[in-house]
Length: 399
Image (cartoon, rainbow, N blue to C red; front, side, top):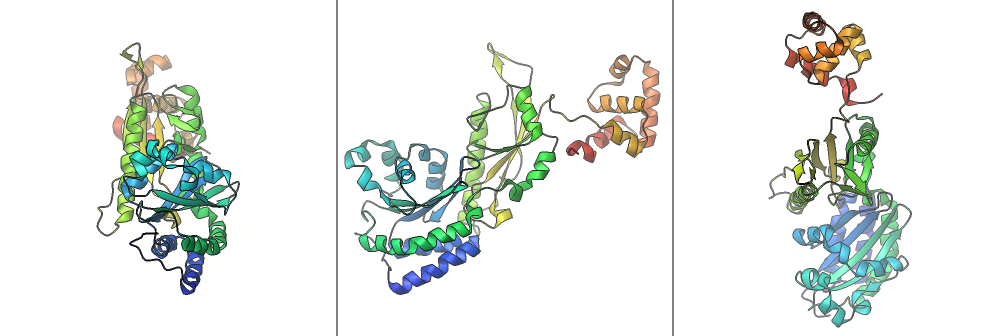
């Protein structure tokens, strides 16, 4: 192997890696130290570890050593779907190696866009990979990447990895939770389920991880948002806008991870919004759905390095808007049934005149009821009352 990176596959090096891998099993923040040291010891261009969360059916983990941020993101967002190497690795048993030069000849490499558009421009021509773990919860793949000049993984390096592999597999099984998503650890799944607002948790590529009950009801009530083949689907161009925003936010997080000292803290955690409408026969339909979305970085909550961020989508739609709980208005403020009805309609945005028509009462009657509501709720004006009603705790969560 013609490499500018000197190898160190000596016996002392092997014992050092035994210590490093079990340190990483105990503390996920140490995986990066293990990857960096292993890339140097093997004399390869990069180390890449991928984790698939089988429960959510999505690529959950991506980390390694000497991987350009833009290259890793390009792989996660696009090129992984055309990678011819992964299917070959998945067909083999855990611990059995796949070497790309043995399954793809030079003619195939010269024609394949994955190599010509992606791998070779990033000078990562050769791969040797294997499954570390394959359980009902997750599949974890380990791969070394070498440049054209370096050539395939050397026999010495492969023998070193064969000795290290059982320990690496055991460490991954011990710390398996750090390679898969845990919505409960990220945002509190029980809390998400209690929220009356429709919430969908998804990967930056739109693969759905979790929907609460309100979101499931929303999916049944409007065609403006769907889940098809496990992915969030919006009408175009809104779907493309959502994925573009998510890609930008993920890139900001990745850049900040790569250079935490020099990178500006990204605004990825801030909410962005989309107003979703669908054109019908060339005309814009009156129905609108509002999506507010932000990105959650798992390592902030779990102490793990390589988990992909999670997108939290919160929707507002007239069909999903939570109603004011009359029982709470009576219990907290002592409103009468008629006053509860007036307060509820007012919170829905109806003017006093329209409320009187719906109630079948005089305009003055509603105004008197409104004055009584002001007094009981310690408010003075309609905007102040509406703000109070919309921020009642019971409107945010379900019993």
